[in-house]
Amino acid sequence: MKVKILRQVTPFSESYWETFSADVSADTSIAALIDYLNYNDDIVEENGKPTTRIGWECSCLQGICGSCAMVINGVPSLACETFVRDVIKDTENATITIKPLQKFPVIHDLVIDRSVIFENLKKTSMFIGEYNPSDNKNKEFEHQYTASKCLKCGLCLEVCPNYTNGENFFGALFANDCYIVASRNTEKRREIKKQYGEHFASGCSKSLSCMDVCPMNIPTIASMAKMNR
Image (tube, rainbow, N blue to C red; front, top):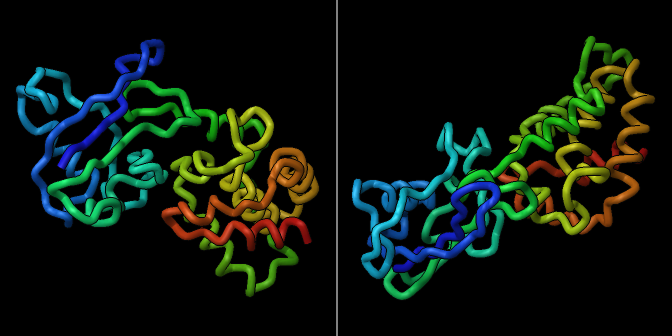
């Protein structure tokens, strides 16, 4: 099969497509596929032209760090959790297209800069602080735990029709964090509700595409319902 990758040498250079040939099974993950392409010292593209190793990020390779987020055949996904069989049916006559997330600055090839996510959380003091759940109900604990699984991988922002550059609308991951902090520290609740309204509620059109791509299957709509109520 063919693997078409959108590459970019530096943050300031032009992007370009490069196509490679690969002979792997349908049970190969996209992360392993990229490793396969990078394996040899002398890397060549489809036509035998020498090229450089493909830049990408990974850490756990178990779907719990979010580092390998990229767009695979048009769908924002984690490379370690997506397999060849998930995106194509025939490995002999197909093309897999891979590109970096498009709503974040590209550093190199498939490596992107997600720092805006963490800067926005710092800017809004989105941390629990002193644990003070004086009016918490036991029934909330299950959803608090589920919402806290967010990887900050950026897939929800990539697919969101309302998110652009993070200057005002902070996306689904912010909504989940607002719920967690507001429910775990009642003294911060008023300020968190204000931040939620300004940086999420006022800009969300409720397409809920964020839930379709979330690798942790977080029901963001439940966080939204609780915050709105």
